Image (cartoon, rainbow, N blue to C red; front, side):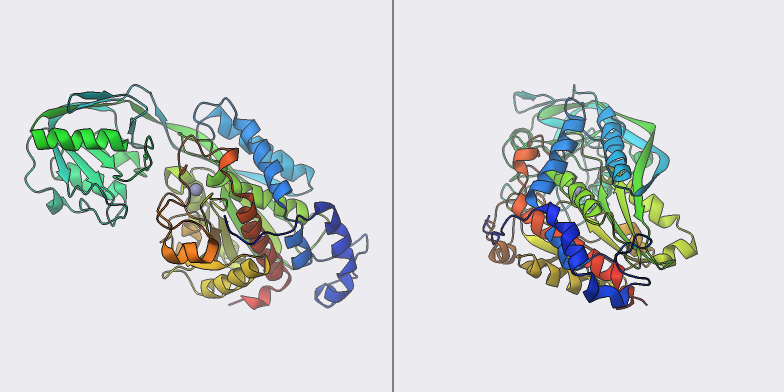
Length: 483
Ligand SMILES: [Zn+2]
């Protein structure tokens, strides 16, 4: 990474910095500054400076330790998820935050581990063939039909989003489909409506050995077996299609209902009815330890929580550690869509931190074309804060594909930071960060190698500090955004 290096800072200086600067901000406090009865408001730059690489690393190590040895890591429904939720709740409680849990029941998914693909004279097992999340299990033997196969495609330009893209399929067809301009769920629905017997999701230029398995969001409408496969297995399928030979796909996945919980925590402000809210998702995918995705966001929020101890801003600061993001934004969407009118109006802004430590990443700031009023101003504040933290911001449009979605749909101003996922870094992103263009921001995205060694702590420090800076700025001065 060529992110501008930043001198290490010691978290222990925070309290002194807050107190020393207190006189400067007393005009915004509602009572005397630094008295025992009323803690002083936090100081944005002091809190941002208290976000250190060491602090983030410590939180990530605790998170990794909590889920070590857990099959499925921190995926919803695993013991690892519960241990991580206990860890986060305990950490926040001992820092003096008020912690609550949002318990809900929803679908969880497990891979039985015995999926098989036979194609082009080769046999692939569970390390190359993974059922898509919420696809029903099944066994299909039939002709292979690649849809718009392109061995060099790394983008979402594939067909398969509409029923007509599948043409007249032969009986028992196994369709092989690359990413298109729609959700994988929409492709599977279109394929099954077109008469396909099985669906295989392929990523032609994926790193060798990588297998992606996106979520199909809701198990109820899924009728045919569907799997993601490695590049090798994709090539064998295409070869079988060219040779006119049949393939055999057996998938082994299980969907069931589980009780899960998101963790929420609050630091009360001095002014009632105004909340600055931040979120990161606590769950991982089944296939990897989720240290960048989204341990890095979780670590950022926990480090911020610690830096705010002993202060009282005007707005309440609320942190959320969401369950079920990897399954389809389940925890955050359920929360945001069930807010009462008063609770919804109280939330001044929702800031999301999902993947902020990508090894070949960039300092992305949400800049979404369809975000609610106020989000543009949030983008500008975050971009300026990234610069203050030593980074060069680049706008990113996630199309609502992360936990801010439910808040945006509820009309709440949203923003966030993002260092890139599995897609190749663009020339503009590379120019802003020193990342290598054309390579994934995170080659370990949703893979077993998303471990502690994968985390880019200098970049995480910049993005977490920017988030802290803006959180405190808005919590002290909610009038900057108030509609
Ligand atoms: Zn994520």
